[in-house]
Length: 595
Ligand SMILES: Cc1cc2nc3c(=O)[nH]c(=O)nc-3n(C[C@H](O)[C@H](O)[C@H](O)COP(=O)(O)OP(=O)(O)OC[C@H]3O[C@@H](n4cnc5c(N)ncnc54)[C@H](O)[C@@H]3O)c2cc1C
Image (tube, rainbow, N blue to C red; front, side, top):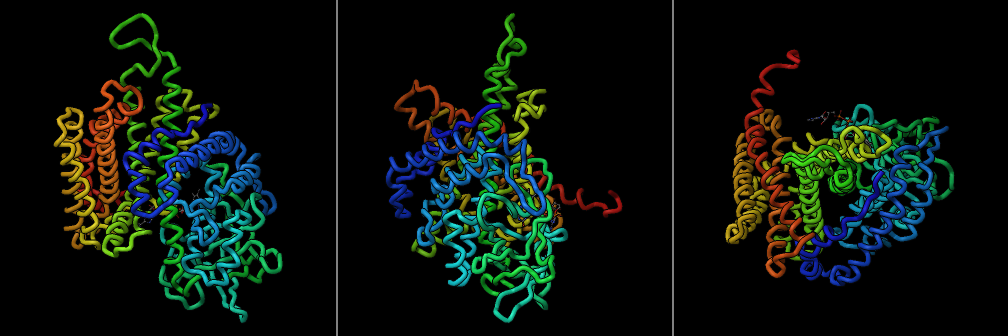
């Protein structure tokens, strides 16, 4: 079992050199980001917490799991203590606005902290993460009275929160949900129905659990237009009485064993669970989407976090495991890191993880710019970039992390397949990232329909302009490595342009064909986004190396990652573009009966 070491050098490089945190601090007026020492101190404290408190419980959570008995759920040994420490240190409310009692740290810094915490213990992180998102949703849509009643205890960590969308017949199609809400004379509602797969729907970490529940009132329009959002506490705050919501079981899952995934039954005793409307009737999906959109970004970040963990495990093993002789001869057996294909696998893992991180932090920084921008045109342009990138990042990073964590098992050989080695945990834990908060198909539909076609390709063109600047800079540098990166990035971008244009032009007439190729389209957009930011990282690193041409270590590694990614990952964009444009007819040639 190997431990997790927070990659602070890498995180600092992305924050300082790729994003330019000091410029960002001026743009968004952040005192925290302007204070480099403070930023460093926060990163180091978070790294210590991740390494020393959360990481040691990762295997415990995986092996012990969360246990259900008579409606109660107990988390794995050590989770309660870690939660109390997490809350005492204030890590639970870093992202929550100061006006709500949180610390209001910029999204960029929060992304770095969240990455470290999730690498260390993904299952643990769900609980405080969902709570912070719920505060955002309440802040956005709830009445003042509800805000005052619920937000302070959620921010302090005394209570936690959940998001309740899924029902047996309503997964990707949330509008198919049947949970009912009946208005009472006092203005409250009685909730009846069953929700499944609810993360931390029941647990022993906090005094109360506040469920944000989607339900429909009698006579509401069919589908997603008839869905309303309700706040339903496990224990009614005024009276301390147990509400009529019961956890009837937890799922036995492939991964994330430390996080209880609960079935919740509302109104089983006949009276209904008491809840209150959040926002307007039938506008629940819009209100809930504040939570869902934040969650989608964080799911992409799970890809970065577990990619990093898996890379660290694979690298350590490859440096120690002795097996086989060098292909060029010699009588001694060598460590497997000396075999070219093992190196290739490690670089596939490292470069893709760095690419995902670069995109994650770029999105987070743009969210900060959006939030603080006064000029409305500029604000809209930042928001369009974020809107375009969320489905790309969520879909691409979660799918890529599955490949990266699987490659770690390959690097380990047979021992990687043995549970005791702990190598399969990141793979098992990250597999669900491509499923929850909207599957990759749902992200790809969102990308094509809302972010490309409905937008008339405007957000895409604005992003392309940024890539063009990067290409020009690469071409102007008299450096063979940067010119190689330029060559591959240019070729990938040309292929992406042709696939995106094809999708936009054909969507109206050949919708099904375009959607059949939408996941490859999403993946290639993610690959290019990663390649663009690694290319920018390489130019920055090369500039720094001009002053230290013989430097070893971090900067040459950054250039190597970008170079490798350009040579190994970006060429795949060409074939994916062909798939995106050409797979529709073959996919739809025959009806269901042919399967
Ligand atoms: C560990 C875990 C934790 C979870 N936590 C929560 C939680 O806290 N709260 C919550 O509400 N839910 C939660 N979920 C539920 C999760 O969000 C759903 O599982 C997910 O949205 C997919 O829904 P589904 O399982 O019904 O699959 P389905 O929607 O039945 O999808 C099955 C397949 O069909 C595809 N598909 C479906 N519809 C379309 C379409 N229109 N176009 C193209 N393809 C389509 C999907 O992409 C998928 O490949 C959790 C799930 C898991 C496994």
